Amino acid sequence: MKNRDPHNEVVRAQFALQAVPFSTALHANDPELLNQYLRLIALQPGERVVDFCSGPGIVAARLAGAGCVVCLDVTHEMLLEARKRAPQALLVESHAGRAPFARSTGSISIFDIAVSRLSLHHVQRPEEVVLEMARVVAPGGRVVINDIVTSENKEESAYTERIERLRDPSHTRCLTGSELERLCIACGLRTTAALSHDAQQRR
Image 1 (tube, rainbow, N blue to C red):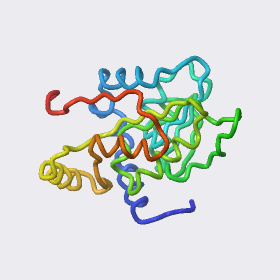
Image 2 (image 1 turned 30 degrees about the vertical axis):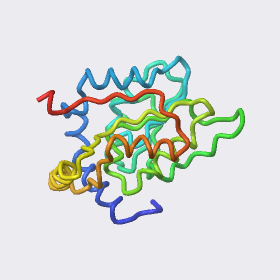
Image 3 (image 1 turned 180 degrees about the vertical axis):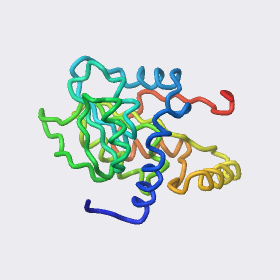
Image 4 (image 1 turned 45 degrees about the vertical axis):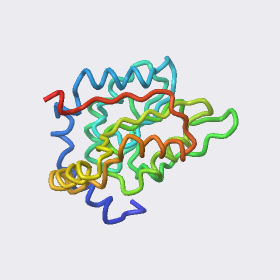
């Protein structure tokens, strides 16, 4: 595969090992959080969806009624798990910041919805991924992002980052909620809804 770089190789190595455990991990399959996310996606019958950094297809498997679902992920082993969970989905092995899809122009569009869940904190340049998500959806389409965000307090954020990097070498950086919103605006998106929950309250 082209465009290999050191961090991508770390991501591939980590998630090749995690593909099966992650597919059944409690935090990734929490029904309340998944249902909240699906309500934000608000899928309509026949809509075309691309799942950026899809992992093992946890979201794709719940998109019954879509006209087309594409799982895009840089890790081959994750896509093998996605094939089991979401056999209706098309699988694309690619870096999310360089999606191999044509640009949506005029009345010709590739997707109605682009989604990404629990992935931006593994990406060195999240703006590349969000730009690609915005690029491939039709005018008036939806980009729905769910990720870990960190505290606006610098000391608290630094502590979180140390823990995350010890826990997972593929971690880059969690954005704050305000950073994520500014990033989306800079990529040409308009925020229509934002929800959050405190993980500590669910322990």
